[in-house]
Each structure stands twice: as structure tokens, then as C-alpha cells.
Length: 440
Image (tube, rainbow, N blue to C red; front, side, top):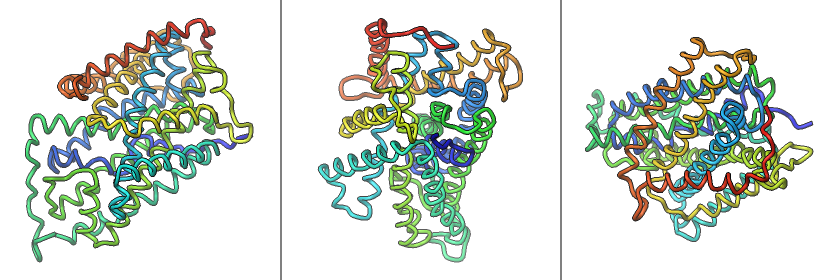
């Protein structure tokens, strides 16, 4: 019988599905400045992450089924809504997963610049996808255990940087660190851009739900894992940003990879190299954990006859859906050279709409199945469930408004997202004859 995930590995896997360390916060610091960046990083988990984590805690403990959010939405709102939930999530995954091989190559090329060339970058990205595919075939327990080790390793350099930063006072020997000048454009558009980056860095709490069938005592484990992970993500974001601010490092001109320069300035080359190594682990860990999550969607879609039965087959030893994992790996390898400049906007948009469906499912299940056993239940009844989704929905609407002016070539991000979403009903109609009645 395949070994199941316990609390600590589930926390670590969730951490990588959501965060993977402070990597990716550089654009937030550059666009908003330190003060506003820290405020955003403190506020976002309260209005964006905590509601999603609490929603996942209730639904995953009440319906601990493989496929997670797809099963919740299908049960609450019917097969079409369930399919659209899976479709939106898989679409978002393409744009999301295109980021991590790029991040992997970016940090490796800081040590070996020759690896940054187009041919080498593509080969390295494909190699990383192959490694994570093999890792996932070994099962959820192997991915969760690896995530636990990588979490400790990648956060260690930031912990050291945070300890050393108060003694650095860069450029001002014997005095207090100078006030840091906010990035240009921090107000208005810069603040909105920073908020979108923060939303991207704090999203993905529902991803851990798709492996509920492979978690030990999910009714007890999920609520605890979600709350611990929210605290871990927030602390691992805020503390390093506050540390480099205290050291007096100017945020202007920060871009992806700037943590390496900050670490080198604070602790020397050895700490910069450690942050580079952590960046490599971040990319591998996030990609690995998200393959674990997303590969369960083809599995449950095949079980419901939206996809060929091949994708529902599992390895008898590890429980891993091998063909679903391989299918996802191929799709992500094909996305390596997409070259989209605004991956974050599309990712937040598509993921956000799927998250809204999950909050609607939370409310619908409170109304339709009031007697459903809920080991972890949010207070406030149906009105409390409605209130929980208000703030995340408002932030998603902000992201949609922002996306209307961002372009992917000749088409806006909002228009491209709309076209991709509208393809969902077409595919649902084509596969309708393959469906079987939903399992309730």
C-alpha cells in the first residue's frame, strides 16, 4: 500500500505550491519600495491567503477526495462547473509552470553564465522537467519528503542574511542604516503591479487539495497544514525584505535575481552563492510540488470520462498516476519557449476565476448539504461562508481590470484569457458523450 503524506511533508509541499521562498518578490520591492512592499506582504495573506486556506481546510476535511477542488465544485454545482474548475486550473498551470524552468536557468546562469544561452536554457529546462517527472512517479510521499528537505535548505541562506543584515549598514560605517528611497512609480500603477505580484506569490492554497486521497488522516491534517503554511509563507517573505531594508540596500532597479546581489553585499560571495543554490532548489521544488498537484486533475477527469482511461491508471506500488504525470510533463515542456511577458497577469486571472468557483461551492454546500460532516467548520453559517470570499473576489476583479491593458503581442491579456476560458464549454460539449453521472 502506498505510504501517505503526514503533516510536516504536507506543509512543505503546500509551501512549495504557494511560495518556494522569497524568490519572485524582487519585482514587488522594485515597484512599491520597501515600506509598501512590507505592508502588502502583511496585508495580502489576511485578505487573500487566509480566506483561501480556511476554505480549503473546511472542504478538504469534509470531502477528502482525490481531485480536491474539482470534486468540491462538481458536487456543489454540477458536472459543467466541475469541468470548468479543472479547465481553468489546467490553463493557469501552463502559464504558471512556464515560469519555473526559466527561474531554474536564471539562477544557474548566475554561477555559469554560458548556461543562459537559448539552446542551453531549453536543454536545462527540459532536464529539470524530466527530473521532476521521475520524482513524481515515485509517489506523493517521495515528493512531500523531498519538499521538506528543500524547504529547510532554501530558507537557510535567507535566515543567515536576516541575522547578518542588522550589522551590515552598507555604505554607512558606524551609523544607522539610511532611509531607503522607494522605487520610482511606487504610487498608482507601481502599487497595483506590486499587488498583482504579491497575489501571485500568495496563491495556490487549493493545489494541495488534489492529493487528499494520498494524505494521512486528511480531516485532521489539512486544516492544521493550511494554517501552519500561511504563517510560514508570510514570515519567509516579510523577514528577508525587512532585513535588506534595514541593511540600507536601495530597491531601485531590483529585478528577478536581485536577492543574490543583496546576499553578497550583506554576507559576502559565499552567501550569494548559497542564495543562488536556493534559487535552483526553489524552481525544482515548486515545479515538483505543482506537478504532484496538477497531475491529479487529468486523473480524475479520466475517471469521469472527460479524458481517455489511460490517464486514470496508477502505479500499484506508489499510487502515482504515471500517464497523467507524463502528459503534464509533455505539456509543460512544450510551453518552455512561450515567451509571454505577462505570465503573472494571466496566471492570476485564470487561477482567480477558479478560486471564485471554489468559494461559491463552499456556500452552495452549506445550503445544499447542511448535515455534511465537517471536522473543521468555519463559524458564521452560510453568511460567514459568503463573507469569507468577498475580499479574494475583490482582489481578483482588480487583477482583471489590470489585465485589460496588458498585451500578449497584438491581443490583451484579458482578451486572451477570455478566449481560453470560452474554449472550455466547447471541449465540455465535445466530450459530453464520454461522461458518466457525477459521483456524489
